[in-house]
Image 1 (cartoon, rainbow, N blue to C red):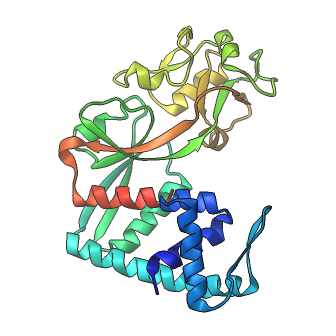
Image 2: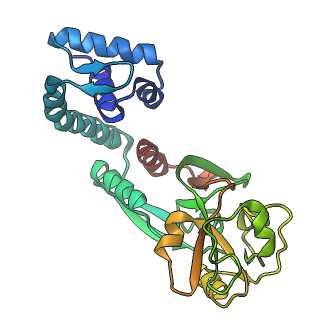
Length: 287
């Protein structure tokens, strides 16, 4: 059997769309069709029904997927473990994270640990007012931080977790009862920024350039939330973080037209190790 054909079938069974399957596999839609036809030829029956409106698995395709998935995962894991042993991925990976350890990041750590049982992951929180400092000082090997990242001495690896932005204001604020706001509405807010040494381009993203920075400068997320609750200013954060930190005296309002919040893995250009590369690979696989 051709591994690429099996991989293509499994991805197609998840996406049920030839175009998206091609995007995930970095091949053309025509190549997806070719791989599927070849696999069906080996089996001797149709696995996928394709019409102008929908793509779905045949009953045989459903049964084949259920029996194939555990075998494919076991094979893939065996290759990853062997490659890790060949690379010598062991010791301790010190991983920084900003704000909270999300479910996605936690699951990636679990997958990485299963592949590299000789490598322990030590996850520590990095301070909001100094997101890049722990990486630069060698306190962590790599860190998951909010984008943008424009640091010449750092490498930006996998980018993930794109989330819509939310405005956080006191329940006493005029915008608190709005169903949503636009970037133009943010001029009515006293924006809260992050204290140094966090660079301004990072702490002030994604506020519009004309923002009046009349709110306080804070060092931690909790300091910022306290200032918002006291109606001393407003903050912007991603939907997941806003929902996780929801409180009764703070209103969370969707923002219509700002860039999404995005996370990325960063490490020192002169501090890349096999452990860092292996974790970046695991994070990239998470999509």
